[in-house]
Image 1: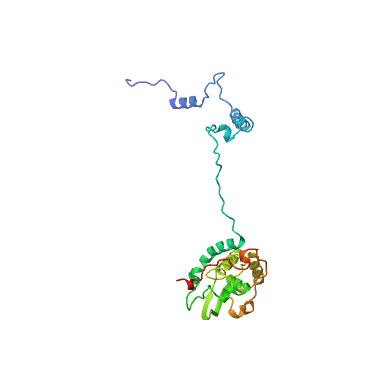
Image 2: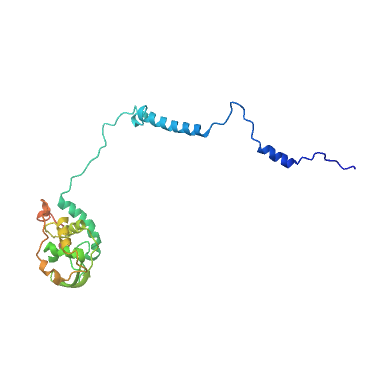
Length: 240
């Protein structure tokens, strides 16, 4: 009898849930902006900015440059170019770089290694027919050979080189360390490569005997390389 009585039979939780489900009253004149209006405004802003940039102010750096009043440097860019290399000089320069792959065996002096690697300086194989040495540069050489009166019996496996690289390195070795001989061109090497396209493995000295004095067909550009280097590098053997 003395306990408080609850005469309200309404479930408060259900009442609150019902209130939450009710949409808020919209005040006239304060409705939210439709999504299509927002998207349309964004598109118009982008198009308007592009038009203004292209036809009104432009994006010219001269117009928007904060240092527009800066005086122009009358000296210009000041680019200085060196003398142009002729075909022979260019081949010698590039050939010296390609020879970095060969000097581990033949040495930077071109003297090779006694009893193991034949020399390139003064070698009749280097100064002989270009057809023979071009084939060696492509596929290598295996078997006993005689170079400058000394015998060598080893296997030479050259690195894989393009026609241009072979032409440059052959020109380089034929005109260094006291050697003097006409340059070899990329077109010459390409003709030899077409002839030996089916060959596999290193050549033997017997295979190359018939090319001993044969030169690759093709014209040599006019200049010092058409005959020999005007001033070849000195023979290391004569250095004191």
